[in-house]
Every structure is written in C-alpha cells, then in structure tokens.
Image 1 (tube, rainbow, N blue to C red):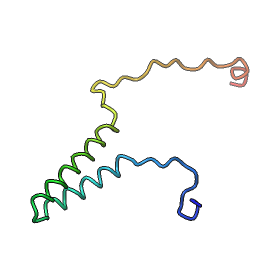
Image 2 (cartoon, rainbow, N blue to C red):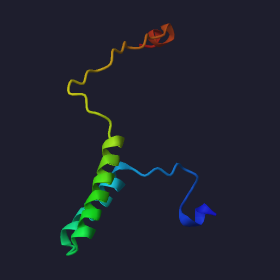
Image 3 (cartoon, rainbow, N blue to C red):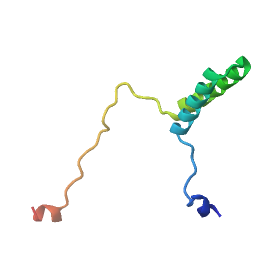
Amino acid sequence: MGSALGYHGGSNVIGREYFVRQAVTLFKFAKITKDPKISVALLEKAADLKARVDETTPPVDPNPQAPDVEPPAQSSAWRRHE
C-alpha cells in the first residue's frame, strides 16, 4: 500500500527542520492576521513547535574534547608487507 505513496518501509520521523518551517509559517500568519485572538493562537502554536525543536536539539558542549582513542595495533602480517 505505502509504496504508491512513496513509503518504502523506512522510519517515518519528523525532523527538526519540519518543526522550524511550521513555526516560521505560523509566525508569519500571526503577523499578517487582523484578528488578535487568531494571532495569539498562532503565536502560541508557534511557541509549542519551537519547544519541540528545543527538545530534539541536543545541548551543545561549550568545551568539546576529542575522545581518548588509541590507534589500532598493526598485525604482524601487515608489517611484513611494508
């Protein structure tokens, strides 16, 4: 059924970009509407979407450090061909 609609069995997860686009669209509509009640409702929904974006965005480490990694040991077979 799904293949006709473009679904091929993968995970269907809504990404951060989707929420950002939706929030921006709601904000734009809130700015141009003449009805203050509708404007407030749209702004509240945009804020909800922004909160979802904030939930899905991992915190940024201000001091990122490389993990401690040791180079792999070379096998004796590899060293013979050097």
